[in-house]
Length: 88
Image (cartoon, rainbow, N blue to C red; front, top):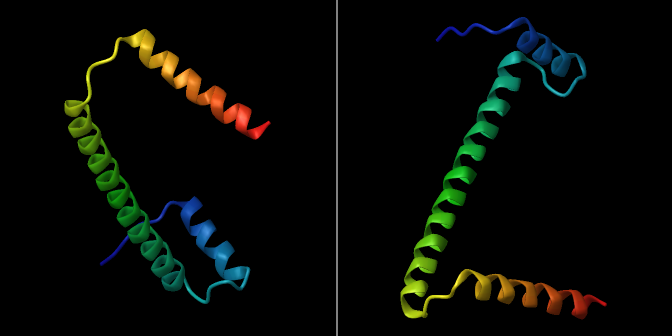
């Protein structure tokens, strides 16, 4: 496989090598790809977690009576006030 790097990318890699943190461009790229893989996995896990929470909230909403907007906002404000008072 052959890849092309921008001058900025090449400079970034050379800076890492010159700092002594890595011995070669291949090592820098290996670490970068590992981190990209970790990032992608974490993003997927986060998306699945959010999806599960949304589904659970939708199921819970089927079991609770609907609230009008004013009541909903007032309940949230009451919870904030309780937490603020607990910290004081």
